Image 1 (cartoon, one colour):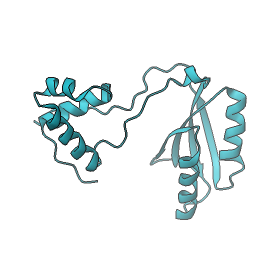
Image 2: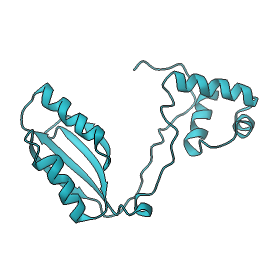
Image 3: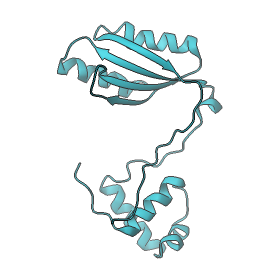
Image 4: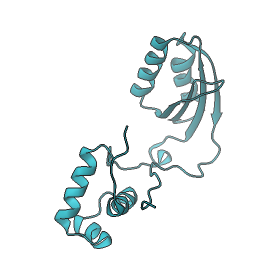
Amino acid sequence: MTAFPLDEIDLRLLALMQVDATRPLHDLGEQVGLSPSAVQRRLVRLRAGGVITAEVAVVDPRAVGLGLTAVVLVQLAEDDAGRYADFCTRMLTEPTVQQCYSVVGQWDYVVVLVTEDLASYRRISNRLFVEETAVLRYETLPTYERIKAQLAVPVSAPS
């Protein structure tokens, strides 16, 4: 994706929206020095330009009974575009998969998923990584403590 042109006000709006996307337009306008209608126009432009891709509620997994977060390193059996595409489709459609990254090195993917507990993780990992013949091997790193989990990206004014 080509960089979208952003000015200092856009960056300040993005920083504010990442903290609380439910803030009223007039509050945002007060923070950045614009009228509510000018803020609305900028937000529409940022959404249409693909800079703001979603506005969601961030739920604490533990609050909804998902007590285990695991990082899974995955290596596929063969370097085949079809297998990679199939794996990505499975990851995209699996609700327990929170993040999935294609990586360079001895592993092909890093997958972050959440489950109720270890028993439920074993069932899900068996389905996703064992029964799937495209997976050569995988290694699970159950997390002990969540130190930081965020979706916000650092934004700053242009230099």
